[in-house]
Length: 441
Image 1 (cartoon, one colour):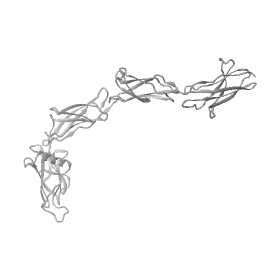
Image 2: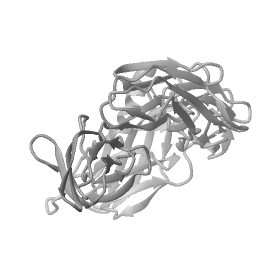
Image 3: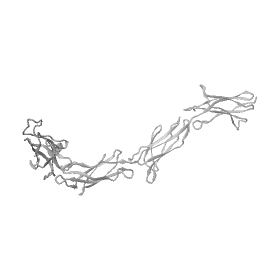
Image 4: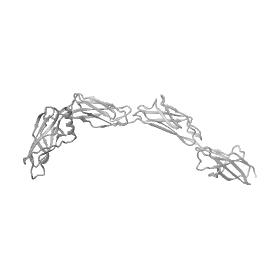
């Protein structure tokens, strides 16, 4: 006697494709078709109470009969003769039984076929396919409580009813006491349906790739002939709550090769009641030579150390990689200006005639950059103790191989003091030259 395992193997073969067998007892000499042949014999995939039978014959098929044979009892349990041609022709067409097949038990049954055509050909063939007399299950009214999860709502509940259509009557009834599996990426749960077929399961959302959820009635070894079914797939969208870092360096402007002594940072999240601190979170920064990490206190605060000496404009960046699926990452960056040095190397002032003084000199920029233009103001004071007046301007000091040189003449007949000034702020230092005295003519 065939085992249930054998029956399942037969059913699997049926699901994979149609079994094509045939037989004949006579042939027409003037026809290209020899005998009656079974092309397909299997369940109607849209109706679990009907058989689909495809036949080819030399002439019109007139009688079709199917016997269903039980592999367990080794007996024919039903003979079906009420077949109608549903597509094609009587010589090459598809036949289905009227009404629904009535069998005493669910199971897999061998299909034996007998047929004849108008030309006298006959067919008697056993095992041309298998009829799977099973309950067709389906998920009814399946729904989820939400398709978007957030910081306050971190799970999804899926519910519905498991129903079944019985092959003999076509009646659709609740399927109680069966196991429904609910899956969502790495999360999984099994629930048992109630008497009315209802089920409900809640799964937490724990991963960024967890973007769908579905329910399914899977293979049940205790109910082999209940077909598997599944619900539609529902999308899941993770909505992240905003976070931010408020960063405060001890200074935003430092001299050339100066340091920012410390930088404080506060990590906050946008709670339902407003921005609140995130305590015990690790923020990091690579703005201090080595990568530095600090953990926030109860107020969400962390203090970072001094920077390395800075030679040029820089920025201090702090970031937090969220350890909570429902909180967004946070980053902050503050620009630091490094004021480049500027200085006069020397200044000369000599009288060129009774009414004119010639002033010249050189500047140097010993930092990491040089201004695009270097305007120099020439100033005069009668006492050298105040009252400085700009009497001439050199628009742009020029590089002469040793420094940035400048020279000009200014009208002045009396004795007095001379100096040069340069305004480089904010990027460069302001500079004032030495004071030079020029006597009257």
